[in-house]
Length: 247
Picture 1 (cartoon, rainbow, N blue to C red):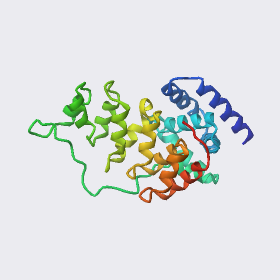
Picture 2 (tube, rainbow, N blue to C red):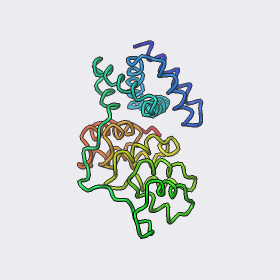
Picture 3 (tube, rainbow, N blue to C red):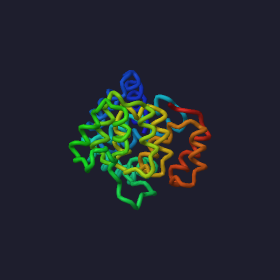
Picture 4 (cartoon, rainbow, N blue to C red):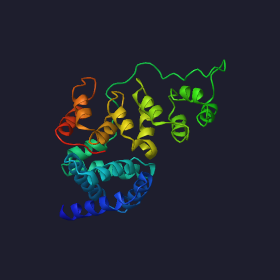
């Protein structure tokens, strides 16, 4: 594990030298695909413990590792890392990375917003609207339940952090919509977005866990006091609440 700790420190130092979060994630995605799943599991475990101890570089490494493992090209690696961590008794790491739906789900089917056209729009038409610069129109697109529409919307230069916070606070909201926000480095680095995701009971449990270590102590206490949120997330936030803050 000493070698793993040295590698973690070196990687953390390397990625914090990159100002662009997207570059950090791409770099780590490339690096971890050259490693065995056990080595990656060790990295995540070390970064997680460092983040909980309020080490800023470790927190940056943890977030970038989680985002790298969420990339499509790392899907198989992530599965192997979860199995390796579980086999090695790194249960917190396995729990952190194992995709799990939200414990709270809506019984109603997600509804496509009314775009005032007098008919239902096709998915292609809704994707096109997600590229619009019309603020009134974008307010409707924010309620679209399809992750492909939201993926395009998140890249719209007209979108603001307030828009994304409202999107992530929506209840109910499909799992895959919040996963799209999580994978978007443009927005997931914003504290308000991360906080909104963790506090939403419709957030997939693994995503909430991966972001909880980055909450301020007061926000973590709010999560602990929210019975609508999952017990694993509340337990992690209880530890976070006793510490300082990682942004």
